[in-house]
Image (tube, rainbow, N blue to C red; front, side, top):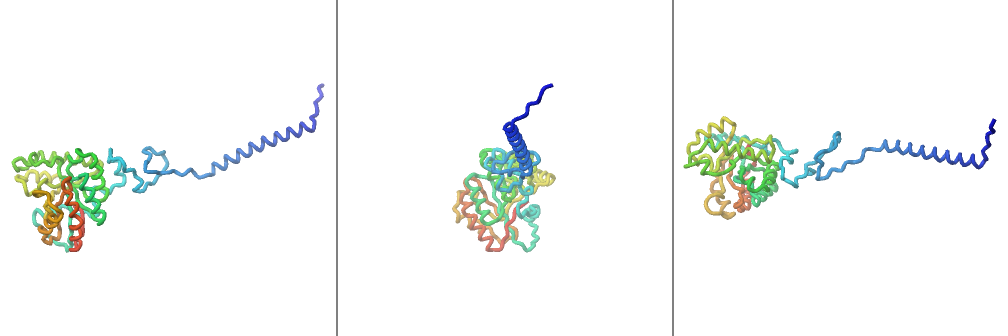
Length: 312
C-alpha cells in the first residue's frame, strides 16, 4: 500500500495563492461583462453624408438641414421633405384666375392679390437673384419652366429644386418654347403642343419626383397671341390643365433689353388697380435687370396693400 506524501506548509500556501488569484480573475471578468451589458447603446452620429443603407431597426430623425443637398446628379433624392405637390405656401386656384383673365369674370372678394410669375427659366445667373429677393420678403412666386433649359444646363436642375423646396409654384411652359413648331403660321399645332407639354412634364418629374404634377401652364407668347386655339383648348380642358396669361407686365421681353427703371415704368404703366394682378416677368439668362427691378415692384405692391400668392 502506497503512503501519501504530506504537503509541506510552503507548498500549501503557494497552492492557496494560485487558487485565490484564478478565482479573483474569473470573478472580475464576469463582473466586467455584466457591467457592459447594462450600458446604453452607443450614440449614432448623423452627419450631412447620410448612410443610404442604415442598419435596420435604427430610427434616425433628420432635420431639414441635415439632408445632403450638395450633389444634384439625382435631384429626386432630395424630395424626402418636399412640400405638398406643387402647392406653394399660399396656393390660389388658377382656374379662378383663368376665368378672370380669359372671360373677364370679375368676382371681387375684397382681397388685393399679386401673382408674381416668371417665364423661360431657370437660368444660372438671374434665377438665384430672384429667389434671394423672394426669400428676403418672405413671399412666393410662380415659375413657368422651359424644359430644354434643364437639359442644356444640368446645373439649373438645382435651381428648379430650390424654387420648389422654397414653396414656389412650378408651372409648365412647354419643353421647346419653339413658336415655329408650336404655332406654324401662327396657328396652334395641337398635336405638337400637347407632345411638347408632356415632354416637359417628364423633365419636371425627372427632377422633382414621379409624384410631381402641375396643371398650370402658359403658352409661349401667351394664349391670345395665336390662332386656331379651339382644338388645343378642348384637349387641355379635358385633361385638367389651366392656361394663364397676364394682366400686368414689365415688358422685359419686348424689344431691346431694358434698364431697371424702364421695367418699373412698364409695370406702372400696365397697373390699373386690378384686385387680382398677374404680373409677367422673365428669369432667363438675359433678364438681369428684371431681378434688379423686382424689389422695387414688390415694395410698391406692398404699399398698395397687396398680398402675394402662388397659382396652383
